[in-house]
Structures are given as C-alpha cells and as structure tokens.
Image (tube, helix red, strand yellow):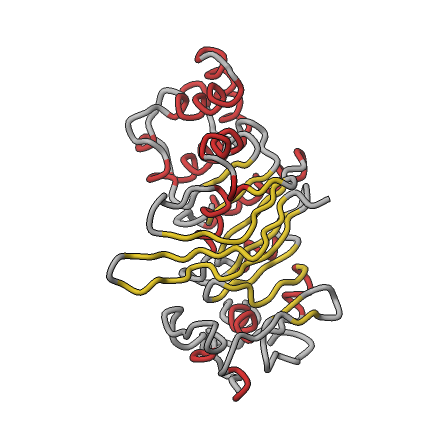
Length: 327
C-alpha cells in the first residue's frame, strides 16, 4: 500500500518585474511504508524544494505549487494551514539540512524537543521533558539529562543533528524526510547518523525520503533512487540496478565522479563539465543537453519522455548509456 504518492508536482517561483523560475517541474514518485526512497542530484536540482512543498513549508507568497501530494489518499496541497500543521510533526517529520540554523539558539535543547510532544501529544511540560530525555538517549546523545538544559551552541554538530532527529521522531511519524542530514559532518559522525537512521527505519517501519548528493549514502541506505536534474526526475530505479546499469548520462556521470579506491595511481578524476546553471528549459530541449557528451539532434526540440527499463526502472533520454556495467 502506498503511503505517499507525489504526482506531477511543480513549483514555480515568481517575482515582480522578473521572469518566473521553475524549480520543480512535474516530479512524480511514491513511498511505501518502511521503504527508503532517495532523491539524488547536484545542488540546484530541486530536491530540497520538493521536500518543502511536500511539507507545506514554502513561502506563502512568490510561488505557485501544482500537482498532487497524496498522503494516505489525502492531498496535502489542498489542506488548510491549521490541518497541515496538525499532520506536520505528528505524521510527517523532517530533518533539516543545517542543524545550527534549524534549532532555536536561545531555547534549551530539551524544551525544543518537548514542545513537539506538548503540541501534538498533549503532554504537560514536566512529562514532555522526561520523554525528551529518553528521546535524546535513544538517538545516542551522551548524558541526555544534562543536555536538556544546554543550548545548541554548547553541543557539537553531530549532537545537534541527533537532536533534530529526536525532534523529528518525537511523535513516531509514519513518514520521515531527511534533507542532507550528514552535511558538514565528519566522516565518522556521518556513518553514525546513517546507521541511526537505518536502525530507526528497520525498528519502527517508518518510511524515509533521503535527500542527498552523496551516492555513498544512497548505496548504503536507499531501496529506490530518483535522480533529479533541472527539477525533473531523469532516472528512477532500484538501488542495485541504478549502480550496475545507469541509463541516463547524468546518472552515469555522477557515478563516475565518485573516486575509486581501485583506480590506478595518478589517474584523473572524472567530472561532469559545466554546472547546473548551464541548462535550457525542458519545454525546449533536454535540460542536461549543454553538459552532455551523448547529445544528439533529438535532444533538442522538446522534453524527452520517461521510458521503462526491463528491470523496473525508468529514464528520460534520447541517447541513453547502453553499457552493462558502469565504468
């Protein structure tokens, strides 16, 4: 049974006196209970805007949101703000990208965890603080009783990220969205955070949307992967299939950009030329065409359609990669 079904989601930012900008352009994907789905791509591909649209956290002005976001059959985009507030935090949790800016700097950690329980579970402050201590302990924060009274600047980046996870999991949500949860953390702490998320998904059956640009995170955590470029999904596939047989040149380029331990000494790193800003509107051509080494005449003139693969995936390309195993 599908828990979340995103259908043709679009987000267009508008500003007086300037051209509109399409950040998300017809994104569709689904998430089942207990499943981990990845949204992958470079910065500027529309991953975070997609998550904010799902959570109803985009600014009230200056944007137009279209499509459907069905959570248990209810379209979240059509809910009144107060109804969405009731679901946000209780049924859908989110771990934001920067823990230092996401936590209130002048409120103790314990109060910030406890207020979620007060708001959605009806706990009084004393009981909520006791449960907050248990939550901090559950996410691996040492000496949680002492941390309740500390402020965000008094704890490390890894503990701040764990505190955000505790806040997101306080009400045992059915869906958790993690937006780059390992950004700016050292490798050891990254591994601990990812292990913690994997254990939480396995133990509670919570569905997880993992937003990342790190393919190492995808390899160890995600069941299904959606690769975004220019606000559109350009390839979707089960994790093992994506790594073994990438079809879209952008996916292939991302995989080849990862340094390999078995590469000969002195070999140059592979890169994708240009930047995300070097694109064209999807209505005119494939947005990846200016950076693609496999561009053909058919790539210019309109949007490539999603085509199915033999192993349950889809890709959007007129000249896909045909090799059996990624280089």
